[in-house]
Length: 516
Image (cartoon, rainbow, N blue to C red; front, side):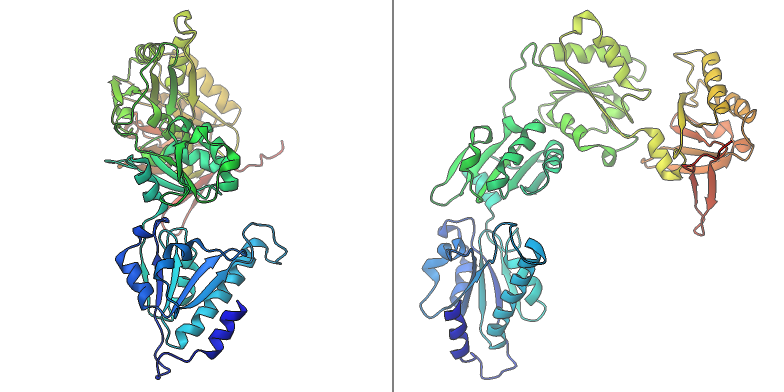
């Protein structure tokens, strides 16, 4: 570095006019093979007066080695040497503080050349703005000097090419993840995406591998090390030894379209009951997305099945809303023949939904060997409560007003018990075309125990295109405004409603209950 500083002091400005500045290039060099550099990258290096490149303290630079054939003796070289390469440092600002100081100092060194009218090319492996160090120079200099970013072939593209397999096809989603993410976050994202590339392996590899295994994606995962460079290695991620993984390696989940699926074998199937939440994709959990993507077959009430993306190679079995038992047995039969089956349910599958129907069927001796899992979803009550504010902020009861599976006398007794206990009450299935009187009966019964001014949240189609959430007094609850897509939340004696200046209002139940 001292030699370069001396060279800087003795170099004359390129332009006699001191107001003319040099040009900044961020040059993408591609993944490693010099033949994968673009023509524009080669030309930018040729035009440059100064060649800058990052390196560790040992001084060797992969970026410089890629571009070596194009660096001339008359080029001024500026090695930008990282002060740290791991998070171990005594810098008062820690690892990030040390790097921030380094980037600021490096940008200042390049600015001296630019102010003197010299063109500076900063070399970057892959693409300059894709996890590249050049971006830190760009953010500090591009608003002061003419700058051009020259894209390069990324390691992601190179890895897919070396594997000879599509990354994404059709409507698939590609997720690119740094291996430095927390393990649980990696697991969630791997479970929920179609295809993925995990970068920055090296010391992160053990946690990355565990994340692939926990997400159920390890059998699909491939490994690429030093793509297009000397020492390239490819294979199955599951076969890679942790101690042999360098930083320049990636883990790849290729496209699932046309990927070979194992033939179903009796005893290898399972049933996963998943909750799709109250509406569309925004309400799905990463775990649910992963289970739906991994399934060989998806089974459910047609309305809920329509919320699930269509995937190649996956069969779909829709049915009417009133055949829960038959649907459960059908799913278990498919699993018994070796298929991975996802049974979809609205909201949370364990709240007035399909989980109970599947578990009841699975309790039969014929299905004793079929694994069954239940994955939670956002319930209608929680979705409605969030839209209104926090009416479920204290103790509450959840009751279905449907008397199709239990007599009205039981429903009425439970309403009285919840009302007497001064619980907030979430009412599911309040009305339908064939059940028109239950809401009125419930209102009259609750008025025996609650003030007429008790807030009642009417939440219809939460998350859907016709969503409507409003609050009325219990005495003003009109059964004609309630249908099967509506959920009611009846406040307790403590539930409050506050009108807002924008015309809206908030409903909440205090966490502290007054002493007697």
